[in-house]
Length: 319
Image (cartoon, rainbow, N blue to C red; front, top):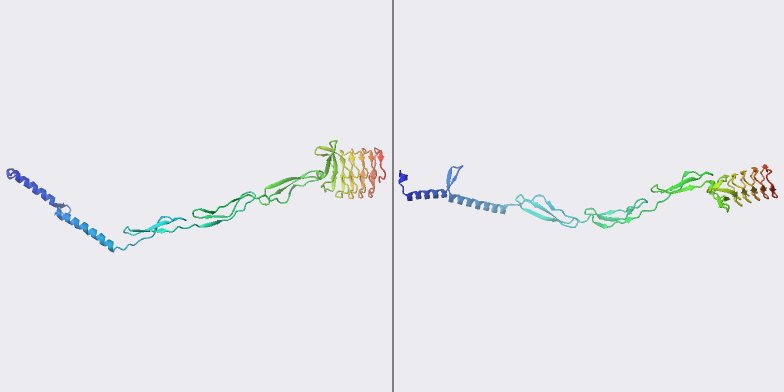
């Protein structure tokens, strides 16, 4: 009833007092106490000032202890780097790292071979690869041939083969046919499109077999003085393709012992076998019609010779 009988002015005063009381006191729940707001503000202000003073005083008295230097920017051959060290308080200091400078290395010369190019002497930096002396390409060198290697030996009637190899890379450089004894002899092409054996050439065989063909054409005669004075062979076989043995064809062949004359020979020329002092035996075929002057003269070792009835002409001083 008393509250009901209060005047409005009294009610407003109570509200104002309550509000002012709430503005001045601050409730601290966990302590269960109230602290005037102004007191709290003063305490906070003092606390902040104390912290600032503590920091300032601490900073004045703090001695930095910096840790290890850590690289921030790497130095290069030409540019500076940067490194820093930190204190626990957060303070940092930095310093520069001097340029490293180039590390030069010599690039040795690489000799060229017959299969690969080479490189001239040069130099460069091993860190940044900057070239100081540029290397030039050296051209390949020529192959160097070794001695001839025989692949197949030649005989008097069959060709052989040989080749050379590079001494550095073993590459086959040259291939060559080794002529048979027959092919080493000299031949002359006649007007009748046949060949004449005209000389011994480079043939060194001891047994001479005249071929019936040379380069696909028949061999029809033994030429003038073709084998005169040759002493490398001891026997001769003349094929049936040969029709004429020219003058002095085998004269002075002092080591010639035997000769076989083909059955198509028609004419044996003058002094054809003159002074063949080792000649022992010879058989003249029935195809022969004429034997020239002195054909067997000075053949001192000759013990047997058969002259067939076909021979119609014999020159002087046959023996």
